[in-house]
Image (tube, rainbow, N blue to C red; front, side, top):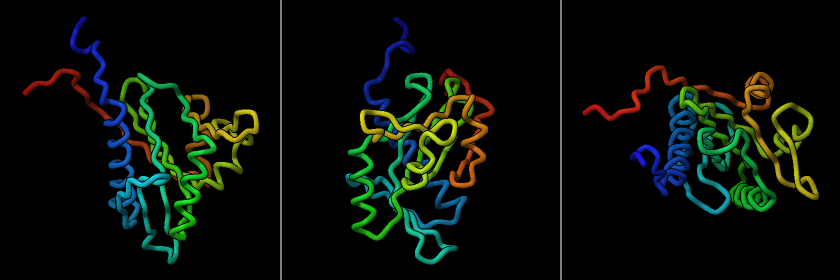
Length: 172
């Protein structure tokens, strides 16, 4: 078995940390927000919109790499309750950031959507569904067939990063 076939058990944690750092970078440096990593039950990041008075967000970050994970990410009822509770305690808007990396690691799509909007869109637009016995698990799918709708929806903030060159061998 080659070293590339051996999966590092920490990759899942590292992917999550990468997603959080990337969302903080985009919000802080490209979207003009003030951001902080909070690593709290329910929220990973807090952000304040410097342009709009009173717009403060509690953000839960969910990251996926399609090479190892499926094209969709669920956000179950327990996660929703924890995010909502945190946001309410600090007078913030509960928001989810989905960081989706395609199979070849060529594109990284970052979607930000408020929890209320995600719930409203579930089962009404391609790529967002609710599942489970009581339809309480929200699912966000970045499958190719859904991208046109979710990437252009007015209630979803979408940013795409493209990796134009990736050498799979360490050359130092």
